[in-house]
Structures are given as C-alpha cells and as structure tokens.
Length: 332
Ligand SMILES: *Cc1c(COP(=O)(O)O)cnc(C)c1O
Image (cartoon, rainbow, N blue to C red):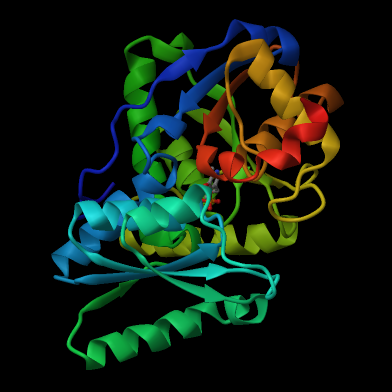
C-alpha cells in the first residue's frame, strides 16, 4: 500500500476484545475491534479517515476545512475537534430536515461548538446539493484569501477509506501476535452510513488476508445505493494505491436499517439495552446498534454459520446516543 501524508490523530492499535457473554448470545466466535476508542471526545471510525484527509490538507497548506453531515454527525464532530487540535479553521454544514425546530446544543453539536467550528444549518433539499454547496463556499473562502479543503460526507472518498485499509494492516499485526484468536476471520461486520469504512475494510481485508468477507450493515438508503457508492470509493482508492486488490469481497446487508436514518425500531432499541446489560458494550441507535442487531439476525437466519469467526468493528457513536435519551425511555 502506498505511503501517503498522514497526521497522527488516533490512539492505535485499538483493542481487540472477546466478550464471552456475547459469544453465548450470538452463537459464534465473536471478537470486537474497539474503534469506538480511537480517542477521547473525538473518538470513532472517522478519526482513521481524518488521519489521511487532514494529512493531505496540511501537506497542501490548507487553512480551512469544510465538511457536512446530519445534525448529530459524528464525522462533523470528529473533524471539528481534529481541526481545533491542528489549528485549522472548520466549517460544518449540518442538515436539519425539520425547519421549524431550533438547533439543539446536545451531543455532537455541543462538541462542534466546543471545537469552535462554524456551524451552518442547511435543510434536506440543500443537503442533496451538498457537494455544490461546499464547493461554492470553498470558492467564496478562496476569494477572501483562505485555502479551503473540502471533505465529503462521512470522510468517504478514496483517500479517507484508505484509513480503514491501514486499519486492516493493524489487525493483521494483532493476529500475528496471537491476539483475536490468531487467525483470520470468516466475516467482518460493521455499520455502513456513507460507504468509506466498507470500501477501506474490504480492500484491507483482501490485501492483508484478515477476513474472507465483509458484511456492511446499511443504516439508511438501500443495498443498491451502497453497492454503487462503495464501487465508486473503491475505484478512487485504487487510483491512489494501484497495488490494492480489485473487487474485494463486500456484501451490503440492508435488512436492519430500520424505519429511517437515525430512527431505530423498538426491538432494536430494546436489543441495544439488552447488549449493554449483558456485556457492558454500549451501542448507539444510529449506527452500531443497527449493525449489531443486523449481525445477530443474520446469524439467527443462518446467513452466517454457527461457530463462525466473526469480527464486529465497533465504530463509535456515543455522543449521538447521549443526545437523545428520551428515545430509550420505553425500553429501560
Ligand atoms: C460514520 C459512522 C459509521 C459509518 O461509517 P461510513 O464510513 O460512513 O459508512 C458507523 N458508525 C459510526 C458510529 C459512525 O459515526
């Protein structure tokens, strides 16, 4: 894999854990890679992508970073805090579909504000034009003498995804040390929201031989949408690092996406509470809870054979959970 400019942001390697209570519950040989603890308040999967994205921004001498996401975007929060650490100006475009609602100050939004990011509120229609909107804002900034750097939704382009290809190299080293059972996994499962993690994990799983296949659990949209997105990101990543494998194995599973983005079913919310009580592992209702629920269902259906070696990649999301505690009142 090619060497690219990188800024150290994440606390690595992240732990690779066995949680016996969850083995029993799921009926597989389950391991959890704790990418929810890549850092402190800035923690989660986005930090691995930002190491390469902001590495490029610094190498290009950019001084202002623009990005976007939903109102409780973990990616926007991680970017805002990383920018504060690197003394970069940060502008985040956050989507609020309910135009009459006031801007919350909870969870990720509070941390965006702590970081001193400039928060620009946009509606659902503007969000669909997010690429154009950010490009226009970047042009305006450039005219006033700034050097802007635009990061797409979720940090999910070819460059960002390579942060997850590197992560699979890290996993290879852990397996070689005898951690995580010391041999490759049958499947790596994780939540998929913008496709960058899936693309990078798939490339890395094939490149470093750490898993036979990758199962990306969609938390919104559908399988066809993500297959297209992931294919686009894979092509970009391979253009940056042509030594990477072609057509790495990745399956999108959209059976656990629930009613809508950031809306979980009662059953999913009850499952999240059940997992926490049985194991101390805290999942969030937007990403990891849906993915882990989807994994449990896939095993139950027989899609993943009993006794398989399964790695669940915990991608973070705690601030989003804490931003909406009332959503859990009926399942506590
Ligand atoms: C962004 C995010 C994901 C999804 O990763 P993508 O690369 O955007 O698909 C999963 N879990 C959490 C907690 C996230 O914040």
